Length: 222
Ligand code: CA
Image (tube, rainbow, N blue to C red; front, side, top):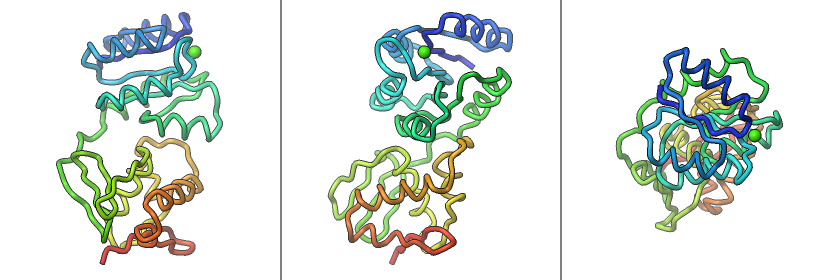
């Protein structure tokens, strides 16, 4: 894989560079957000290993900037904090997975392999239920023609529900869909995101996402 490591800890960069190169990866590295973004724009990468704490801008901002630029490169976020909020923040900013420091090198390799297996973007398709329309090509959601700005995870959860209209989906099924790389999140995270999603969709569309007690959620299509 052609990798970019954006990390200001020079010692960690040296170690990662040596180990990853030994494992036949091509490694670029940057010690600031600005340098990293420039490299990410210029080089065709298979994955970015991105530290959250960088001297000029946070890794979260780097992830958001890459996604805003339309980059779909898999991002593995490195975080020093194991708090749920830190993880959700990272994933919400557009990271695909995260690793808490200090981590074992084998764990890093496993995460990179998983990112490499990521399925290609799905072909263009409109999913709809009543006033809700999701355009997969443009990653755009409208309710009664009104644009609704959703975060990446809110979008994924809505997409998951729209793909199986009328079916009850458990919180675990939704977690697997919206967080496919095994992020260690709890089903409560799904509840929090469903709450945000309903608020953004507005009352009429939100009523279509039904809570099925003790089981999960169901999108009413008809
Ligand atoms: Ca750092």
